[in-house]
Length: 344
Length: 277
Image (cartoon, rainbow over all chains, first blue to last red):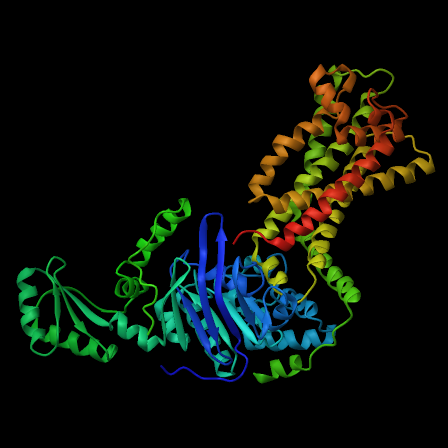
């Protein structure tokens, strides 16, 4: 593990953090350590406890058990200090929808204690940086999801926080806006911002995080670098769906010579491992084309969160969501098939 | 790029706590007030409804209602004022409930500002909006020929009492808005609880003519005290029959104190505790 050993006070240090809502345990004895200058991602399906965890760390919810220090301050007894050190961008755009982009940023700057002129300078800088100029005078309620996210991120960076918390920053965004958020986050990380990021997307955690903590039912089920997790989950592959069973036979014969293929007969699908992504895709595609075997579909397939859950827990994320709902109904739905720790 | 941070790293001087509270509360009040011209529907909610009731009761049902010793127009307007003040509870509740479900309040709460200033901004914004709505309704009444008979002293007494009532009702609405799970639920409470209380309060017809059960409720309905206060001060006559109706201004002032004593600490506690998430 390429864990950065750091003598500095960690940005987050949580032990046994627990939150219950009635009989439903949203976060169950979760430990978390985030070193300064690193990016840690909490990855899990809806209802896994990511947002609850983040809200406890951001002093918005009081833990029922366990303890956590953020930037060296206790989240319960020194909540005000914690609030001074962090910046939270929640799952839903945390902006006043009846104010314009610029008014929102000015308000946040003023609330952080900047006087009028300093606030204006700061806000102008952020507007330039996040390319908000085009819609600086538009009311937030009239902005697109991607535009709101940009203003939202800018609002979170009025004072350089010791810890930036982004709760599902790209959920509900179109692919282009998603790319914009990613590149912004990468820039911030390049500047040394410490980041805690929650996401439902494996590729997002992979793209942005140094370390990923996979959670489900409020518990850690795996942790490690994206590479370590992917190694457990399996690689990317090219899936080819044959036009008929005869074509499937031909495909297996053709590709089996050069690759370690796996075959799913009912789906008429041949899978070829593709660690080289696009290059492998091109290789497989041209081989299939030259052979003139009729195929319905040929696509590069990345492991999804479902694949990760399947590999690590033996059930898929969507199944575990159902179980979460069952758990919410009452106790007794114990999950013995989830290993306590499949840690890397 | 780093220039963005360069200015912010020269940390702003931390003002001492009371000054910061006042500053943050003013900033957040200004934020709430900006919503008034931008969401005109909200102001319409607190003005259209009373205006519709005025027109209905003055020109549709009014001819069938006869109150001894006073024209129906003069009888009606104090009732309408009491009713629309009471409906202000619903308005404040819906607006608060809306705000609480928005992420922006979470952002405020995660910032190093006092939580009291956040709730102050919420209350002051609603308070100003309710006062504005009230002024419009009174203006409409005067334009239609309502004749309040006010001495200067009574005028001040009335204004003070109404401002106190708006303040207390706003806090009550803010508390409800924090307790309910959605703006729709707030509408529901309004319809089931506040609507009947506002109708029974000697608003449109005298309490003395009501059936025993509604009469008993109306005798101790806080909105009755409010309507009786306004009617007593502007027309020199009001319902009687219970201690609060015999001393309506004193009773209304006491109601406001009681409401504030309950709603303010509960709302603050609720706000600090947070909604489930």
